[in-house]
Image (cartoon, rainbow, N blue to C red; front, top):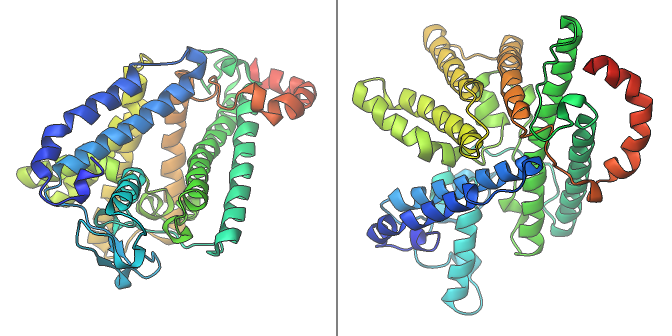
Length: 393
């Protein structure tokens, strides 16, 4: 599909062929699973496969061939132009046959998450680059970030395993009912915020791995791997959190599985395409985040979809506020609003994921390759035993 979508006159064939990648993606995601203690990896595999499935659908439904950006520079979007399909851009002529170019181009299309080099990603907000774009320096800094990220993930994963609720394979709640309410919510807040750090770091570390591989192995330019986060928790509105601060790697996925149908429905029933796109995109996000749990037999929890749909409502209210007052939500009131909304709603979704074994109880960094579990936490566990006992009983 990635090969065909770059070729003109292939729309009908793509539509006829798309059931094959859909079936293969679902089979890979849910047909083969590891034992319960590897629930994290079962979910991770399912999430990746769903992205691939919705990419195939996206490639199938677009009537025209995908165009590529020439003179790519995410800092100078006004200097971009799109190539005619079917031929390499002048700036990226390859030695050898066109087959070599087609193979590399198909791979680029397949793994592109934000579409920065293609026509469908030209409205994506790109964070400011803070690393050197000199190849060797870029690789060194990316590798350092990758190692640091793995250590952070290992530390949080190892710390979680010290708490009794996470010492079983099936999962446990972040709300320990046996604790008095002040202590209970201190513990749940610590686990909540550590879960947020873990989620963000997982995205960042995977991205650093793909960045390092793309630049070192595939010879890509560092320019095509700009940062994915832009100080999300320093933003001053819920709109800016999702549109600017948070990563945009799944943006197109949510458009395809919810946003575009929602836009069509909104136009048909008179709500407007923009409102339909907003609620449809967050519905697509809710569907994407909950479907793997349900189809892997981990049950359905309404709190996860509610989290995303509540944010759609919050963004809609921010739009109403701007229309009524003429001023967007911003400044320190917007900053407090964003943290109030995010903090109040996010705790429940993390509890949902922990309770079904997707985070705290699952193996994330296996002990055999975990420096924290082998060397650091055997010492820390003895020192922290009284504190852990207090917060767990």
